[in-house]
Image (cartoon, rainbow, N blue to C red; front, side):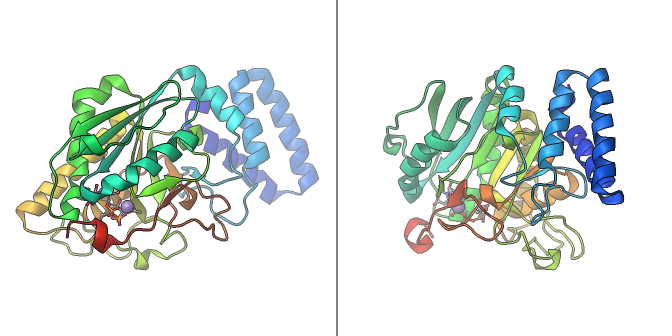
Amino acid sequence: WRCYDSTLITDDIMFIVLIRSKMGTMKSLLIVCMFVFVYSCVSSLNNLISLCLCLGLANSRKDVVTVTPWLAPIVWEGTFDMNILDAIYKPQNITVANTVFAVGKYVQFLKDYLESAEQYFMLGYRVHYYIFTDQPEAVPTVTLGADRRITTLKIPGSDRWQEITLRRMEMIENLIETQLVSEADYIFCLDVDTKFYGHWGAESLSRLVAAVHFGFYSASREHFTYERRPESQAYIPYGEGDYYYGGAMIGGLVREVYKVTKTCHLWLDMDKANSIEAVWQEESHLNKYFLYNKPTKLLSPEYLWHGPYAGNEVKIIRFTQVWKDASKVRPN
Ligand SMILES: CC(=O)N[C@H]1[C@@H](OP(=O)(O)OP(=O)(O)OC[C@H]2O[C@@H](n3ccc(=O)[nH]c3=O)[C@H](O)[C@@H]2O)O[C@H](CO)[C@H](O)[C@@H]1O
Ligand SMILES: [Mn+2]
């Protein structure tokens, strides 16, 4: 059952890429055919499916990097086959939790968020939205698909937007601890000032999933806006760092995301005790966490974009920030 382990699939991809670059196309094709034959004789059907996926799709995007230096896939349009992925994940009967916070004026984003999620997010899977808000009465009534439901959780408001965004770590940690360990398999924690515009499905599932921030996917690491003050727990020195990840998306197995939120909550508390707030609040801490706990899958900026128009490499927008006048919607 190698398909369940993304790193093993990646091994296969690397093997194919390696022989294609070392030999001519005909020779490598012959070797691949022999390999497929031997492979199919000795492996399960699932292994063969995994190999076919790699043969067909591994090199289909030449304009973008599709694998990290630690061999985690970076998900771009054209690098995966939904039929194969659904054949793997659907039989597992998984439940996907989705947390979203709508505090103060941000409740206005809920309608579009939920309606678009119902059109594109994890269709065909059991989805449970958990909406944290200070105004449960303002949660819109949205028609949900079969096997999809909403739980509204009342939380206090705040007069600082930074406090609202960074407190998400602690609240998600508590939710997982008290409920989700027994209620869900995977979780995605997303920003609410957003909208889905395209398919977001099982290709996004893995043990620990991060999204490459749209502003930095082609930037060099010196330009990443990591926290640079050594006094903060989020500190990352110049010369270190892999990618700059967006705070608007944390995903993965419930138990893995629990570790993210617990650790970041601890670091946020330590910073608070030292009267320091990281430059991008919990996003800075998240970047520190992912530097030392590498995500097993990265979502390309298709999954965290910043407007309705696609870019050069971004051929499809799946999930995007919506425009907001921060001075009008934030409390400070
Ligand atoms: C695209 C992206 O990666 N965005 C991140 C970025 O700025 P953003 O400008 O995207 O932050 P933001 O104002 O959207 O706040 C993040 C989230 O906190 C919630 N919220 C915030 C304010 C408020 O009054 N009410 C409320 O409910 C809401 O769910 C919102 O989506 O940096 C923030 C930390 O500084 C977060 O890490 C965001 O996820
Ligand atoms: Mn946002």
